[in-house]
Image (cartoon, rainbow, N blue to C red):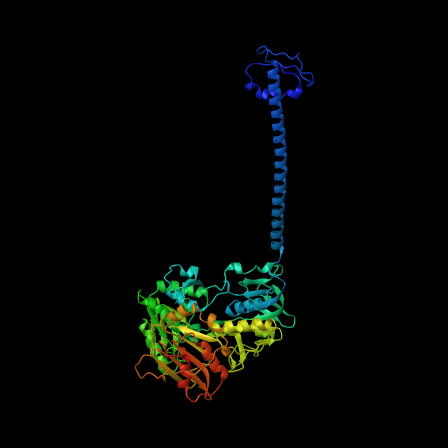
Length: 588
């Protein structure tokens, strides 16, 4: 038996002893000879010493284990408390964010429209005011994206999933997305008033339907109201339709594409795989680009591509007649049945096909129609806002600083602005959206700068032929063209390989005209090609009152700053052959 409760731990190690033991203890007095053992005679002292050593060891171990467990428990409790607190803080923050209204009631900078001009303005505002809070209200369900690839590079992609990824290889082989920035770039609209350093938020799928200029408020199509300090109108334009098609009825409308947005690209790409014939109406930039893109596909598929327009040739409103005719032949070589001098009289459905009747009596049968006949600026807000719409050019009428009112600016396709060099204009091109949006953003943050930096535009008929233009390029103006033989470097593909960008305006518009020195060239005088010769590369000058007001660079790239300076100087030139030498068109 074992007596004395203070040694109750001994049974834990009794299996270690060689024989049963009886221990009597009077409350741990100093051991005496009265201690007896049933073990081997003479071993009592040794056993007692063993008991004390083992007992002390176990007791110390127990105290250590207890202390360690207690400390671990305290640390565990502390960590649980910390994690719980952080979790509660996150939940509280998330709950607070969710509790905020989806649309802020007030924003310092409100941008109406979600296209290139609006994005350029947002970037410009944030560059000058890093803490700015900018809200973009966009009718388009997508985040801001660039439109040029919709009719250019995306059609030449080998990726079968390009309509979903919207990623494409530029002519220089580099891949990029159609979107200006990924979703992570933007903040949620509900969080815009609360984020520490401001940011840009996009309210997609919403439309501003009413504007109170005096009250500095707008109303959305769902009834939501937003007040603002400064506002940009960048509503862009909507594709025009032909009256003959509008009168034709639903059966025809269901087989019609008015090409403008991402969904239009996706839809037409799918249709091009399903039908046997597509007819493009329009001979301008968009119509000719789509014709070349679809014509390239027609060569590998059983697809007929027809392009018809009222002009004598492709780009007939822009290029001089001889170059327009050459362009028409180029488009035909891409596999397109080009029909110039074609005016649509009516469109109807016969059986399972569309029948297009022309005014000269010709008929065209097809499965689908793409109308590429220009844009109508979106100016619906003018009525409620009391803003002036230009009767000649269309669009909101603004001054040279792009202002319609003291705190309202307009940029992009919808702006009819005063160009201090070329007079009142309205321009429908990507680079103008970049330039005017950037200027509007600067002026919304106090720059007070006039529009003088001439925007450029470009059109590529595939990777091998392209041109860049600036100023007033109108085929009704007198022109002087100077050409030379092209080399392998004189293509859009080669140009983007040298500049590193497929959206050429991103690099071109950064060069100030005043930064480009114009020095005499020792190159030989360029000559205009004779009839039947190839227009490899060249410069076309457009004149008004003997002054150059527009320039087209045909298969000449990365020289736009020189053209910009010539227009800015506004001087008369006795010999444009000498001016053409500035572009070094005879370089190998």
